[in-house]
Image (cartoon, one colour):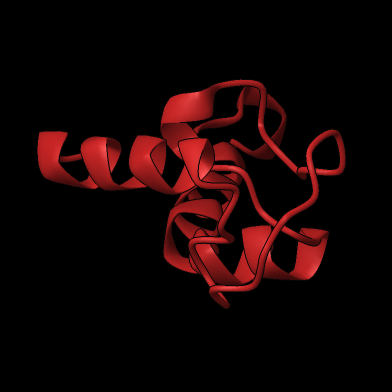
Length: 70
């Protein structure tokens, strides 16, 4: 993840704004992966939509690199 994207996600985190849809996220209701640098989203839908390509690449890697699928 680029430093500028990290800075952008942290800025949105501090302002309680969903990086995907731009809606206000109430404090304590963020959907996160456990790291503020990856953003705080208003819903699991926004989180998965924002990271669609990264999640797909992880799934592809886990299938192709897994010893049980060799």
